[in-house]
Length: 286
Image 1: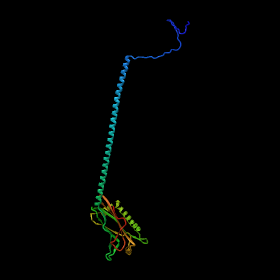
Image 2: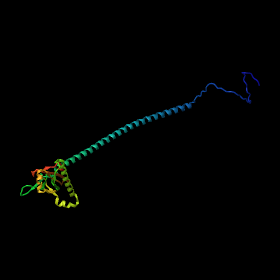
Image 3: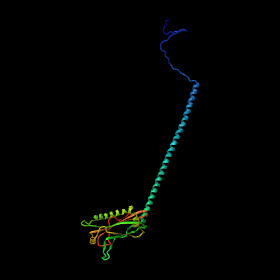
Image 4: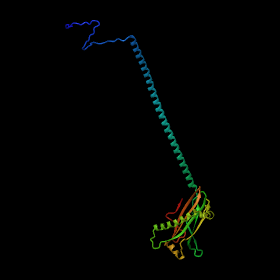
């Protein structure tokens, strides 16, 4: 069936017709919400705003709480540090005070002991015995007394001494050689004194050699004979100074629960028996 352009075909009911080609739709589609949907959306927005407001208040309160906690924690930490620092200062001050007090006490005790302790020293210089007939000194024998010049008794006093000679011979007379001779004699006395600490002679030391000395007492006496032979024909050598006589000793004694020691050293040469000379060293109180 033919038809002209611009005409319309009409399909009779019951007929089947196939339309081919493109279908184009122009314009917009507007959809209107129902009243119930609008009310529901408003309710949801209201709930969301209420939740947001509640959450915001909670966040604000949490922030405030955090800040307060931070401030309190910081203050607590600062106060704790201050207390620790003050406690440490107090502890350090207490320790320093204790150390100072202890040092002061020890210093006072030491000063008291130094002032009050016994001092056993030679009572003058050594002296010779004299020949009864000629009235001349016997250079082979020298004696010395020890005296307690301290303020408290000296207990268990004992000593060791040595009387020896030194000949210049052809050697030049200088101080170094004389000092070396004094050192040798002192070393010998030191070794002898060390024997008093051995158990073998402990009983002898207790019974025979120890002696107590009251303050001012000079009751300790030593009598020493010359170790090296000096015949009477050599006495003129002593007078001329070619032979030097050396007297060295060590005294030990107790006081204030301590043991003290006094070293003494003299030498003699010349024609004045009462004039002895102190050695350059080995004269000390310990």
